[in-house]
Image (cartoon, rainbow, N blue to C red; front, side, top):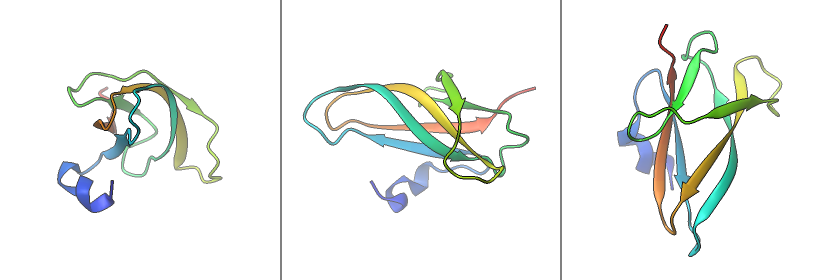
Length: 93
């Protein structure tokens, strides 16, 4: 998947995480993603699925050594050739 293909799904103040299972077998397991927190406000964010439901995630030590990056660990299930689009959005007060 290219950045251009996901561009129509972008929104200001959010970061999108595109998932794609290119295999012929289903995937069910844990994934990691390094998230840029610039624009998400004071590290208060939540990970949401396509339906707006919260996806449980856990911050883990990032490989980037800058203060505006974090790495998330979360579980995902994808059917063969399935595309999913998660989003990190600012958490409500």
